[in-house]
Amino acid sequence: MTRSTHGKSARAISAAEAAALVKSGDWVDFGAALAQTDVFDVALATRAAELRDVKVRACISTRPRAMLEADPEREHFHWYSWHFGGYDRRKHDAGLCHYIPCNLGEVSDYYRRFLEPPDVAVFKTCPADANGYFNFSAANLWHRAIASRARIVIVEVSEGLPYLHGVENGLHASEVDYVIQGDSGPPPELPNPPPCDADRAVAARIAAEVEDGSCLQVGIGAMPNAVCSLLLESGVRDLGIHTEMMTDGLIDLYKAGIVTGSRKALDPGKIVLSFSLGSQAHYRTLDRNPDFLCCPVEYTNLPHVVMQNERVVAINNTTEMDLQGQASSESCGHRHISGTGGQAQFVRASYASKNGKSFICLSSTYERHGTRKSRITLSVTPGSIVTTTRADMMYVVTEFGIVNLKGKSVPERAKAMISLAHPEFRASLEREAREHGLIPRGIW
Image (cartoon, rainbow, N blue to C red; front, side, top):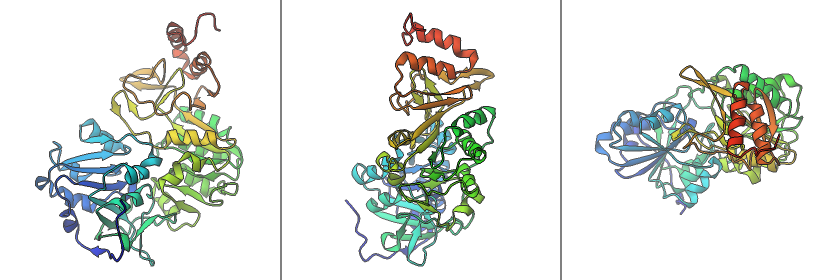
């Protein structure tokens, strides 16, 4: 079902009037990242006592959600997230947030094919432009797919958001039911943690593998951003960018003139993204900049699209890997941390790209309660989710080395993964691998 917009005209109402449209039992969509509503959220929170079983879908909350803070016992609202930010993770730990397993590049299709039409959808947008479009700013993602199905569509306009050019990056006034006035402050920032020694060592190994004309996808975190810093010094040229998330590190490469996009098959000369989180300087760089295209996530993430560029280089983090090459990037046991995101799709897209490369990177150890532990283990922690399968794994990088697992047998993989572990853990890992038959007797 696609909702009809013929003859419609968006009507201005107050946030309280917009919140009054929500009824008990409704499905409500808040949008993702910078598109998540703030003023409507506060207005809805004031109605908590009146409502029951309101189910809200969102993604990567960048600020506390008033409706959750108003309902600590989960008596009125249920929060569902396609990918956790730090706030979502804390609420999940408290039993107030539920993860929806997904490949992010498929979410538009979920709305169009599998999910019941939302009762109310609310997006934070730029004010209407001269052509009557409410720009999604730096958060295109699957928002048009939501709007095409929702019974009621509301935009919360904010003068503080950057305006991004892009493919279908917004809604026309004829597709909107109601407009409410949002805040005019700057969008929330995503802190960029400084790299540690392990981050820099991993980054140096990956940077050495990036060739002129490569097309980058970079995930979130200090380690992938450190790769960007090393690329600034590597002498590489004519890079392209086709990524899900725009990061501060990629912005730095663009400002340095290293990114030209001249060798891309798709959108040559343009930087393609689906959403962005970073510093205020980052947002100022994006604002009305014709070099950037903010596109739906099915265009930025689906492998059959991404692979059309040559030399796609996908750089993503993980938190734990086993000796067969499985990466657990989104949970620690049954505790959910983030999400699959686009990792699995970009791993496959980069391999399918001509001369493409996928890098999964991690520090070899972490500390818990003052004790150092290995991130490379015989098996992933029980309950942990495998984000990238052993069959999909290509390059793995720690501060101690880089290996390519493609074509390697299980014993060869085990030996290769052990070589990437911290020296303190290599002997015990090899002993466990032999005890469990990953490295049979008589081999090496």
